[in-house]
Amino acid sequence: MNAAASDLVTAEAVALDLRPARLGSRAIALGIDILVQAVVAFGLVIVARIILLILPESIVDDALVAVVVRSVIVLVMIGYPTIVETRTNGRSPGKSAMGLRVIREDGGPIRARHAFTRALIGFTIEWPGLLLPFLTWAVALTVMLFSENGRRIGDLAAGTLVVHERRPAPFRFVPLMPAALASWAAVTDLSAVDDELAARMRQFLSRVGELREPHRGALERMLTEEVGARVSPPPPPGTPPYFFLAAVLAERRRRYAAQLAAGRSVTERLLPGFGRSARRLTSAPVRPASPSW
Image 1: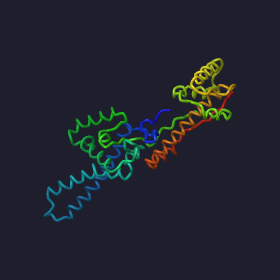
Image 2: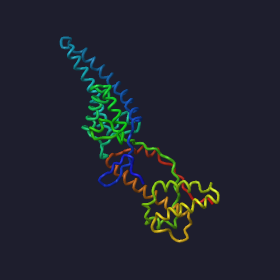
Image 3: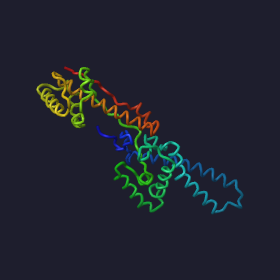
Image 4: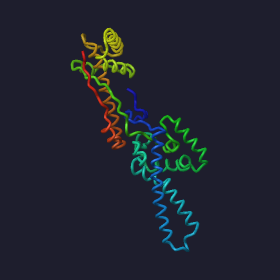
């Protein structure tokens, strides 16, 4: 089975079940965060204005107003994202709305230094980009588009990446394990049965009731011979082809589920609560299968 899309592997040699976020979802999350920052900035401006009105006119001059304005900008553009991402383990309001989260390159939760670096780089180079805005925006977008995991400059500098907490739940056809073949399948070497062959087996088993002879028999024989050449030891003599294919597919899924559970346990230890509610709401539909003829 394929490793997680992020290719993050822990010291236990377990691939974490993570999917990097790309430009589209991150742009929407950024838009939401900008709206939230605008509300925060508006609130801070009101508070600052009230304080300036209370102070004696003799000490309120252009220099003090400039300091207040700069302080509000720094608090909103750097302080706010740093505090929010640190306190929420990488989930700003926009990222929470889009089911995203910032994590370290090694899969662990971010700290204040990571959030601060991301915010500082974003403020100076990416958004709004004080250093040559139009040029740095183009550079930032190019880096993000061509980065393997969709990382922006701030992620590269901080050693972080943004991943999805919610994963798509495609329909999966899952054959039942024939009881008579369970012990054989448990000790069988299935390493040569790749994803492409497994997909063809799944497609055949899910549609076997719709196929007609001689096509069904020919396809069954072809798959049985190909799978039989890739597994060791062979199935017990006299095993019906359908049950042989079903046993291989069911055992392959069982092993993948065990690997996935190990990865998720490590993910839970590194990132407590990661994607928990999303997995409860989006568990993949499963249709058990049995011979239909």
